[in-house]
Image 1 (cartoon, rainbow over the protein chains, first blue to last red):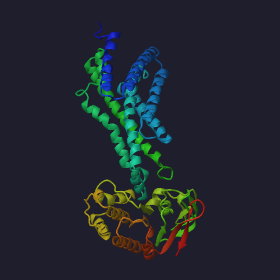
Image 2 (cartoon, rainbow over the protein chains, first blue to last red; image 1 turned 30 degrees about the vertical axis):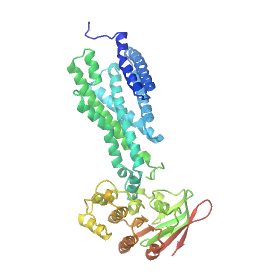
Image 3 (tube, rainbow over the protein chains, first blue to last red; image 1 turned 90 degrees about the vertical axis):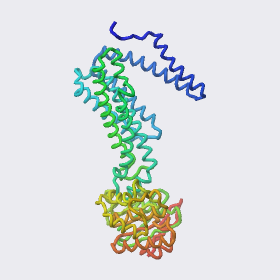
Image 4 (cartoon, helix red, strand yellow; image 1 turned 180 degrees about the vertical axis):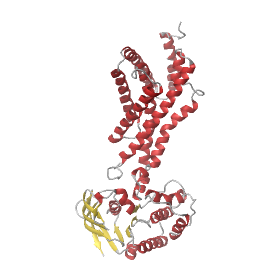
Length: 260
Length: 216
């Protein structure tokens, strides 16, 4: 016995009772969400099973190429997800900025974290690199999604103010400053809030997972603090890159507002 | 100040040849939809003509940094929006956008008084009437003190008496300082009284393209 309770199939199956409870609630209240709940549950299950086997393969075949390939796949999925989830149509230029900001922000944060904070040797060790990159990319994806929506919505609803500022001689940067600041603030707020509640309101998944798998709570907490700071940095870097480059896509070379 | 040569903007405006002289008052009139606002936006380079060229002091607009041009030739829209903050913030922001230092309180008070706006600097312009907002926006432009002012219907939200007094004040200030004033107005009476030059935009040739008639 290594202290870990290994789940039997029937135990895992028992956990699906929670989903059945949710289905019963929405059906009872006449909320048309059963289909989405079933699809989401199936997708979650299948995706995690596939990821499990993929991680087994990656851990058994430690190579920089495989590690980086896994990160690229996560990155592409995250960028696609951001562009799909926005409530307003995005221009091609803005989508490119999303991709650029996500790639630069998360990769630089990940490499700083891997090389400096935990000084991983070899740097491409998939057992560390992939979950850490995943957490930074996932949280940055959530942050930038909020930033994209706020920026695009702000530029749409406050177009008359931006135009009036340009008429007065404002630079595009000056004319959009308040919209850009609000978009940045909205994007980083969930990360700040999660730091406030961490350890009291909820125990984060990574720390819980480590404790359940037998790691000392002190070690788990050290890692959780470090990763939380890494997430904060990655979200901030990704979002500031996005908003600083993103507002420019609403203007042409003559510093005029692009047609809606 | 401005020389316009063979410009075309979509099917909204076409001008063969036109000059806006420096240091004078030029009024633009014309029916609705004849491209008066479009004309001001072209002079402010908020939009660019599809064809032709506009010259500012002999230099094509396309060769002038748009921000530098807009700081020289400030435009006031017909329905000017209010920026966040109080009256003071709304006055100072024009200077901030133009890259100029903040104005002293006394100058802001004087500017409001000149336009007959009896408001405190701490007041919330969100609660102002349309006419009060228009005068505040006009004060913002006057405070920025640009050599060229492009005003789109600056008396549109004002009653006749107040509108006349405000335009009279703006024109007097402009003449005293030797500024170039280009003003769109639907009122022929105001145009006749204040304009040194009058440009009438008329619905004209094929497919709704407008051409300018030049009157001295």
